[in-house]
Length: 159
Image (cartoon, rainbow, N blue to C red; front, side, top):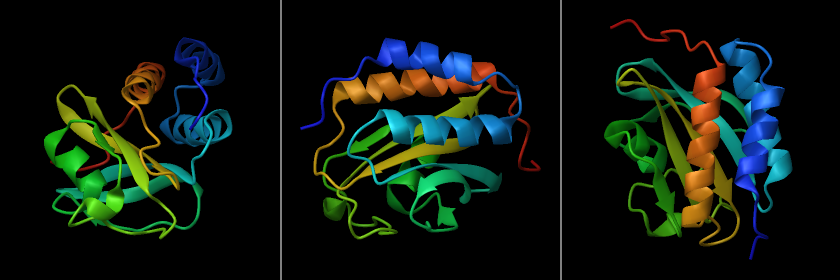
């Protein structure tokens, strides 16, 4: 089981790391930071809403990834569609799971919502079943809130 994580400390460190308002730099830095600081992850990345009801691959750490992801499919699609964090203990139990990496067993996806509009999602995968706890969910939601606060998030989609 993963060791306990000091999310308040990680949040302060991320806040200090994000010393630019640039969305591309900050999203790349956020992925690398999370990948380095949390154990038992095999993928960390952003999927961005660049067209209606579809997520496109953004900055990430890990194996090459699936692209695009419709809102109607998978854990990322559910997070985008519902604008609610998805924490899945066993991705193989999800009927419409999109298997980008057969080694992934659990997943946590946090939507990035700005002024009521979905900008994208932060997706974390683990090769361990039930890797993500409620504490991880709360901690990662706080890290996403810091990312949003520290970053100028442009409209990526024409409405």
